[in-house]
Image (cartoon, rainbow, N blue to C red; front, top):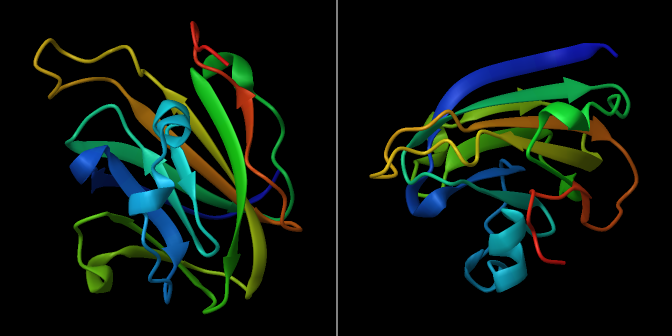
Length: 160
């Protein structure tokens, strides 16, 4: 599995979320954060994906771009979701929900449909005050036809 591009950053997850989106997207996530989306830690729009977090702080993330679907390595992760979104502008931006778009980290990609796999680990590692933890978020993106949201690995004890 070849990684074409990768960014490692800490994103301020204000309101317990951050976004991966087409640079030109301007979608309202308010109605998308349903009870199910909050439980799954993911909300999906046409050109954007909201990633839920367990801390309302800066969280470490790695975003990697692949030529094809990455191999499954779900054992080491607490939760794994997969969804699709469309990139029209040729640029994917990664930012906190209250961050300014001009300062967002970006990946350049050909316009088209993409699949995003969000893997979460350390979800139960928070300090008593909820400010510190070893939570980590990995996002893998590759070109693929549009398909629905799937949870590939559920959190332990999740009721579905």
